[in-house]
Each structure stands twice: as structure tokens, then as C-alpha cells.
Amino acid sequence: MDLAGRHVLVAGAGVTGKSIVPVLTELGARVTVTDGNAERLAELEGLGAELVPGLSEPPEGTALVVTSPGWRPTSPLLVAAAEAGVEVIGDVELAWRVGQLREHPPSWLVITGTNGKTTTAGMLESILKGGGAHAVACGNIGYAALDAVQAGYDVLAVELSSFQLHWSSTLAPDAAVVLNLAEDHIDWHGSMDEYADAKGRAYTHAKIVVHNADDEWSVKIADDHAPEDARRVAFRLDTPSVGELGLVEDLLVDRAFVADPATSAEELATLADVRPAGPHNVSNALAAASLARAHGVTPGAVLKGLREYQPAPHRAVEVAEVAGVRYVNDSKATNPHAAAGSLRAHESIVWIAGGQLKGASVDELVITIANRLRGVVLLGVDSPVIAAAVARHAPDVPVNSLRPGDHEPMTAAVSAASAMARPGDVVLLAPAAASLDMFRNYGERGDAFAAAVHVLRDDAAGAPSDGH
Image (cartoon, rainbow, N blue to C red; front, side, top):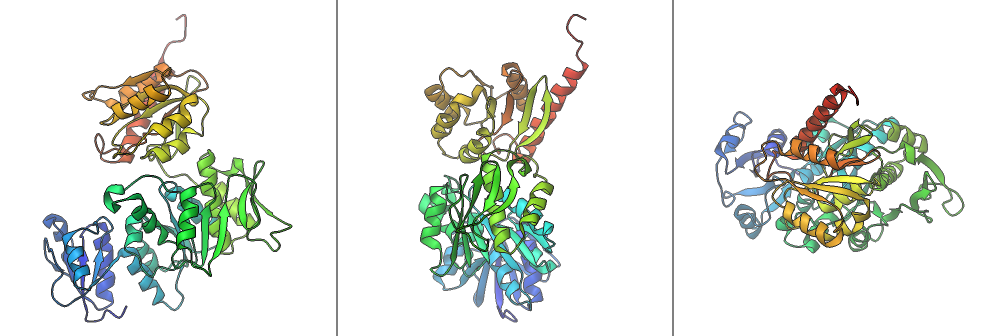
């Protein structure tokens, strides 16, 4: 990491590029930034870097390429760099290396997986703070790991995507977890195995490897990637064995980080302390507790942190209750695996779904939750795929597929769902699909749902009572 006077090329001028350039120049590097978007590139003027649009190969003398996570390994520039023997890393790997230059490097606790990363990172941050640590959640969560390192935090709860991990080679966290794995981002990685291998980089140099005993992929990735000398810890939604965290009736308990795991266990929290509710979030809480306990946090801090954790927006958040029906926004459920966890948290559901499935199958999801469905409301480009799966596996469940031309599709969806629901039901937005066919992002989709529910609630509050 002695970059003084060396030529470093930054691929990508977006948010990641803005974070990287000042750090590289501070280290004395000669920095060039390239991006196909000239306007975005121009936003980096004044940071001390040379700005060159649209490079397809690194300039002569380039010693290192730092890429934004969205750039695919097949990008001509990155292929040319590899062929020229130039190392390519990502911003997370750079953050790790910069942190190691400090007298007291920060502790890294890494979270990855297909679903639940942000919730787990948020829970972990809350637990660490509950134990008095100078800690922050960062990485793919919206606050760059490099910025967190530069800010001087002692402990980092680092959410990492498969893209970020793909470009990380020496990252050696104190503890890491792969929460789960389901079909996603195959278009970027090329295959499920390549996707799994990218996630496995979280474990490659980890001191403590935490895996989800209830998820076959998590177990397999730990088996394939854990160092021989790493400590292995598992968590499960069942009675834990020695060396595991798990559930005993309604208690979250630890049989790993205790003085005598063979004969004793520590109570950490109860199911009522976990928010949002649902088995998938209990699993996330156990993962967060595992990482926190690996860092030396007390059981009392785990309890305090879970109780004080505030769920992030659009993640199983109850918007309102109208006429005995609860309306829950889980717009962040952007793939079938995430939607399954959300749907399993409720007994009787009117499900609002649809969007861009990106080739993912929904048959297994529908089979799993068919007996919970009161009705289904579909919107978005791949709604016919979901409708066909419901017809195959839950033929008695009514389906309302909204027309593509509806002016306010979410308002129409909430109205249709309300007509299907009965008191005690949950109307759940858990799309199982991406949002970009109809919305800027999942947040805008969730906001549209919440706004439609608020209109429904206000209309119900203002409606005359029966007989008047």
C-alpha cells in the first residue's frame, strides 16, 4: 500500500469514485479516473485527479486499478488490466488496506448473503453501541467502508455485496457471516457457483466463521471457504448444539461464546425483543448476536441493542391498520427468497407482488406460502409469471392482475387488496421482484404503497358510519 508517486486508475466516477479519489491522493498516488458518463466524471473536478472518459485499457505505467462495485469483471478495461498483470481491487479492499496502515486498525465484522444483510448490519451496530463500542454500520448499507475507516471508528459492522467481495482479496475480518444464498445477480456473476464463490470471500481470511445452519448454501460456503484454523460458529432457529446460537422456546440463547458450552448457555433475548417480527428476522438477530459475541459483547448488550434497534424503511414496516387489516411495507423484498421470509411471518395474507423477476422462479415460493394466501394482487412487467405460478400451485386463490396502463398502479393495488382482505388479515407488499420497471427504486415503490395506505386510512376515518 505504498502508493506514493504510483499511478492508480479509478474505474467509475459515481459515489464510490468520490470516496476513493481523496484517499488515494492523500496517500500520494497519481490518480486517473475514467467513466463512460462525462457529466458524472466532471463532478470529480477539483479533487486532484486526471479525468479521462471511456478508457478501455489502463494507461501505461498503471500500478493499481480500483473499480466501483458495479463494473462487471468482463468490462473491457478490467479484462485489459488483468491481462496486463495490473491488480484490480474494489473500494472495500482499499478500505481494508488503508485501515491496516493505522496504529490501531478497526475491527471488521462482515455480513453478506442474498437477503437480510442490511437488517443484520443495523442490528449489529445497535448491539455494539449497546455495549459501548465506537461502532458504525457501513459498506453496502449506504455509508462507504472507506469513509468509516477514515472517520476513525473502532468497530465496523460491514455489509458487503457479492460485487464488493468479488474485488476483495486480502480482507481478513475478525468474524464474518454468510446469512443465506438464493438465486440473484446471476447475470453479473455468470453462474450460481460463481455467485457463491464471491460470497465465500467473506470467509477466506476470517478468524471466526459464522454460518446459518438452516441454510444449505451458507453451510456449503463455510465448508468450502473457511480457513482450517478459523473458529466455526453456527446459528439456527432451533435448539442449539455446543458451539451454536439458537432458540429454546421463546429465548435466543448462546452455547458458543460461554465458559463451558457443553453444560451451560447464556440467555440473550426473547422473540418479543426482535423487530421486525418473523422467523427470517429472528435468524438475522441470531447472526448479529453471533458476530457481536465474537467481538466480546456481553449478553446484556445484545438484549439492549436488539430492543433499541430501529428497522430501516421498507423492511417489513407496518404502515397502518385499517378496519382490522394490517398493511405492511416490505418493498425491500426484491427477490423470491426475501419475499418468502416476509410472507412466512403472517398467517393470512393478501399479497401485493410483481416487478422484474430477472429470470428467477417463483414456483417454490408460491408452494411454500399457498396456504397463507387470502388473495394476490399483481403489478409490473413479470406479473404474468407470478399469476401462472399461483394458478399452478394455489388455484383457489383469487388473483387480480392490474393493467400495465393504470395511471397510479400502487393506489389501484392497495384498493384491490383492501377489497379482498378481511379483519385479521395482513396486506403485504413483498414484491419478490425488482422495481425498476415502474419505480426509480424499491424505496419509491414502498413510499407509493405507504401513501396509498394512508389515503385508504384517511378515507375510512372520514367515512360515515353504517346507517347514517
